[in-house]
Image (cartoon, rainbow, N blue to C red):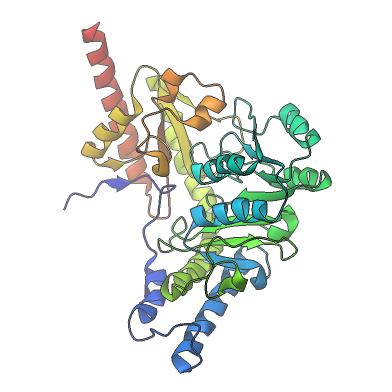
Length: 382
């Protein structure tokens, strides 16, 4: 079976075999409902409690602050809509490079009388200091800034932003889905009111995520019903996925530092080869995730590159997996001042635990060959 080398780890990750083994009993003989009072139910409840403690430990939180959801999108919506529901309409401020599952619910708040303010970024994708001060001067009620961008990999100074937002009276949330397992996260030290996590970005299963939220923050639930998850997320828990999430957190944190060094070296190898083909690496001057590179070659379409690389045996992305049906150029790159023409050529390579140096070398050679062929075709067409 044809299996391209997988270089799209920011989109999703293969299930860690150890995680799979931990999940299997909860897909077979351990099928109790965690709300049931009999032994089957008590086993399920204990498994969820254990997983909750593992997720909390991965980010320096208390287990009572972890609310399990179906994934990062639901967790982001729970904070933005849930927090807005218990406040009078005011200003919600989100960075211009947020994932659609933050930007869209923030836009929806406008129907309820809220004002949306997008926070500008500089040419590297970092929060613009002048615009940030202007945002805080407007006294926003809610602020959301992602810890690490899913396309460029840029890391924001969340601790400083959260501290300043708190001083202005705002509730501060950070989507940390891409940061978990790649860089250190400490809920308490960062000083955020809420943080979003997802299992499938760290070798865990699809369909499991969490909102880590300070218990002093009041939220209205998106889903009402049986009162699970402290009444903030009703519905019978997906025990197998939650168990897998807990184990995935343990595994990701235990290997994080070593993997960061290894993956950064592989990413740097990719980027060292790019200038020969006229490629521009976005956000090269900013602190980034160690596994992520986002780049473009002027005059070459990113979707064309993705298709040719796929047929040549490499699975890459032209941007966010959640926006792959959208033909528009990356909104993050446009917010950084990149021209639409260059942004349409963007290609993302994101590496992970199974990525090898041999795969990277083959990718570099193949990318160069394909770009050369496309440039020759363009020259003939002219």
